[in-house]
Image 1: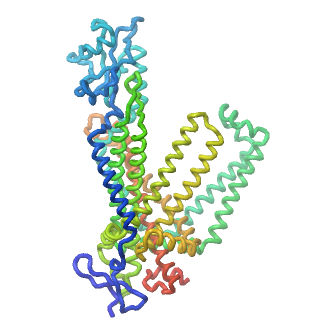
Image 2: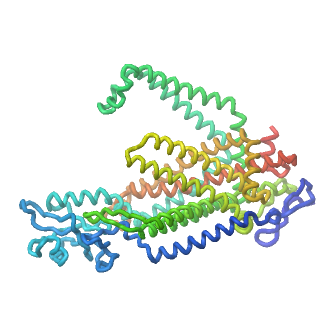
Image 3: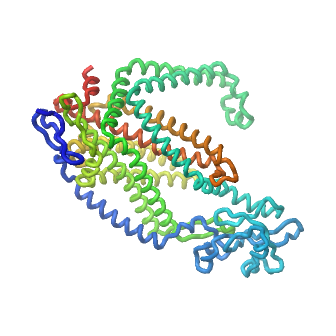
Length: 616
């Protein structure tokens, strides 16, 4: 018999081994059926209600209320009736009684169509009826040069216009100068941001190649660096025991006054702790060498699987685009919803406060739950799709040449199975995570309110305990959900049955899974830091040289730091996507092999490297 998979059309017809008989095959997709239909209906109904809410917010909400100026009559410049054509906030000025500079009425700003720039055409710009009401008389008003900062006309501080001018400019600059420079720099820096994105992709694929060939070396390198760091810190503390407080400033010495008389002892104890940590790391490297080898080999096999299935290599890019776009759309909708709340403004035209009523609070809570649910559902679909593809690869039999004949569309097939058969189960798992996330946010809000109210220690302690419990439950649920999605890809169980099966499998391979989780965490830290540092250095260097650094250039970047921060955010998102797919693929391989061992099937279709690893 030909042990390869027969192919038809673009993706082909896949045949997989069943019951370990080499001449019997089945299609993995055909073994799946619809699960958790009630949860699917609940999710669809919630999406319909959410969509209706979002559509109404587009009509009733206005994000401009959050950042446009507010005039002395409480009208939002450029938005409210009567000031639709006047989007900028301006402070009227008159001659100072002391004879030095100008006097600004900071409590009664007005809305204007444009900011005066000091030209002759704008000399009498602010001579209007509203300024007359503010200043008392047209004859007392004076024109002054301004700069545009967002939707505000701030006094030009290059000219002497009085202390109040400096105060207004300082207040607005503190609030928005960096933001204005950042927003002004980003359009001109789009080639750099695209370059940072491309650079992060290249580095991500290079890192996968490194993990494919030298994952174990990276683990021991990290252990070695941590050991040397602990030894160096311990030696420094031991050699400088009794003298560290002398190098502190006076304020720091006062804060550490409780250590007076015990500084040498405390420093030596901390040094001994560092030496002990170094010894523990060496002990772990020696005693857990086999487990580290197993975990590293699993990661290497996972990377090999990724390169054997090119469609999986595109999954991180798709995830970044889809989840990033969904996040921006949901964030915009939340701002629209928040802008519909009743607004009260301060007297300076800038500060504002939104007070939602009870119905709006419930709407905000519903929106927050749905937003987190949607993002968690996207992650669940992604995890299931990756797991399905790896399971498909795992159960594909070897051909006569010892290779696996996998298709080109496993990812698309996994996505189809996820949305056709298991949307209810994926929605169920993501809903649980969303609810715990919302509870987490509510506890954080309660902690802030407790601090504002004076910081009751008993309440703070109870909230801290609750936060720890919710965080632990959420982390455990995320881990179990990942394994449940793998089990679902194999068995087509519903979420509860898959979770129960996953818990048993996790308990059976707790040691291997723990080491694997630690290894993938180390790889993730190395990968994310390395990719971000390289992309950040490239962006900052390029933004500070050449045409990007010339003020006369169309590509001039006023704030290289802001552009670098944007590039770091982009590269971090890409890096996390690459690390996540390695984590999911390695978990899927280990889970499949453990299930084969539990069933006594021997894992004949497991990748050769995985078979050799567990046979050794």
